[in-house]
Amino acid sequence: MQDQSPSKRADAARNRQRIIEGARAAFADTGAETSMAEVARRSGVGQATLYRNFATRHALLEALLVDEVDEVCAAAATVEGDSSGERLTTWLRRFFQYVATKRPVVLGLLEHTDTTDPVFQTRSRMLAAGQPLFAAAQDAHQIADDLDLDQVLDLVMAIAKIPGTPEYRQPILDAALAGLHRRGN
Image (cartoon, rainbow, N blue to C red; front, side, top):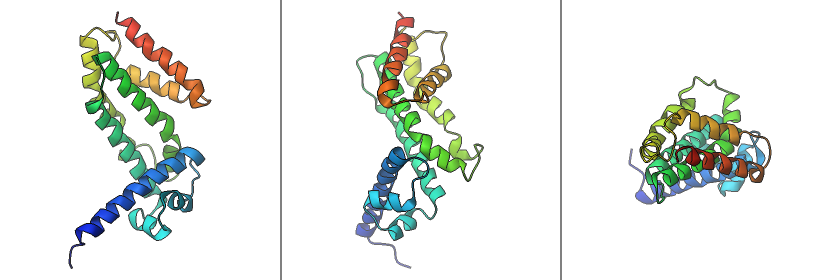
């Protein structure tokens, strides 16, 4: 059997990325009940291409969750800011965005799996990714020593789950993050 040509592999990778991006937007807009047909439409691919990349809805949802976790973890290593506290805050805002938008994906996954599935074991990855940022902010006395990253992530997750619009939750997040910095001064 011959390998696929480089251009076909590149096309397949582009299609997969288009599907992930289209699915992310579709689930954010229409929730856990988003159909595979809607994902294909938003991705600009045919259903055959969608199913060639993701044989089941569960496989697509799992890929969405893993992709988003990978992005949040990678962001911890690349965040910018003038101080360690600013870098931590930037990453916590990215984490907040992840928590606020992943709910439809998780609800869809829960229909056919349980939370002991390895795909749900993301907390340890988030802690490992954020810990260097958190430690640097504590070392710079910008975050109180009596807090740990677990507690801060719980705070951010709780705010993300407050009912209401993003515009309603944003000032709550801003106040909480500003309070973290005041504690260290």
